[in-house]
Length: 452
Image (tube, rainbow, N blue to C red; front, side):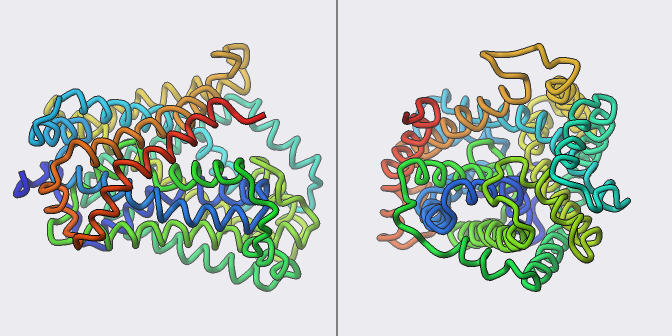
C-alpha cells in the first residue's frame, strides 16, 4: 500500500500542501468566530487554553488524518476501509469517512450562505454604503439582508460557483493554483490590517485583552469552548485533511508539516484578533458582541474611522478569501469519492455535487425568510445543520478517527508514515488511544448537556 499514488495527482511540493491545508483550516472560524468567542470568554485566559488544546489535541488528530490519507492514497471512505482491512479489522470503520464527508456537504450548504453574506459586505463596503452608520442602522441593514431571499440566493449562487469552479479544476490546475494566489493574498491582507490596527488608539488595550491572562476568568466552560474551537478550526473530523493528505508526497514529514499548519492556522487567528480588537476598543464597542461582531459592530467601526472604507473593504475581502479556501476543502473529499466510486470525470462530479449543496443552501438561506416556519427540534434549517455538524458529527468523527489511529492501525504502518522517534511516537499513540478521544468526548458531552 505504501507505494500507491492517488488517481487525482499530488501536491507539487510540501509547502503547497501546507498552504492548501492551512487554507482549509483558516476560514470564518479564525477571522469571524475566534475574535468574538475570545471576547465572550475572558480574553487572554481563553487564548492560553486554546493554544494548549491546539497542541495537545488538534495537532495529534490532524497527524492521524494525514497518515491515513497518505497511506491509502484514496478518498476518506476507501482510505479507512483499506487500512482497516490491512490492519485485520472490520471494514465498517469506513463509515467514519461517510459521516465525515456528509458533514462537509452539510457544512457547505450553510457555509456558502455565510460566504454570500461576506460577498455582499465586500460590495457595500466598497461602495461606501456603511459610512457613518449607527449600530442600529447596521443591525437593520443586516436584518434586511437576511430577509431578502432573492439577494441571498444571488450571493449564495455566486459563492457556490466560485467554489465549484476551483474544485472542478483538479488538484494541480484548480486547488493548487488557487492556493498559490489566495493564501499569500490572505497573509498580506491580514498584515495590512494588523498594521492599521497598530496605528489606532486601542492597540495597547487590544493586546492586553488578548494576552493578559486573568486566571480568575478560567472556568470549565472557558476550557470547553477553547477545546471545541481548537478542534473545529483545524478542519478535523470531516475528511478534508485526510483527502488532502492522500495527495502528499511520501518524502514529506507528517509531523513537521502538521505542526507548521497548526502554527500558521493559530497565527492567523491571533493576528485576526489583534487586527479586530483595537478597532473595536478604539470605537468604544463591545468585544463580546457575539456573532454580530463582524456584520454589525465592525461595519459601524469602519464607517466612523479615517480610511474606514478602504480598510473595511480590505477586511471583508480577507474574510471572503478565507471562506473561499475553506469551502473548496469541504467539497474535495466527496468529489474524490464520486470520481473513484463511479468513474466520473472531475468536472461532472464537481457540478453534480455542487448542484446538491447549492439546493441545500437554498433551504438554509430560506431559514431567515420564506422557510422561517420550517423547524427541526425547534431550530430553523440553518441553525439545525450548524448544530448537528458542529456539536455532534465533527466531534464524534474526531473521537472515532483518534480511536481508529490508536487502536486499529498497526504500529508498523503508523510508524512507517509518521517516522517519529520512539518516545515521540509513544506520546502520539497515547494521545490517540486516550487523551484526545477522552478530551473530545468531554467537549461533546458538555455541548449536548451544558452545565447549568
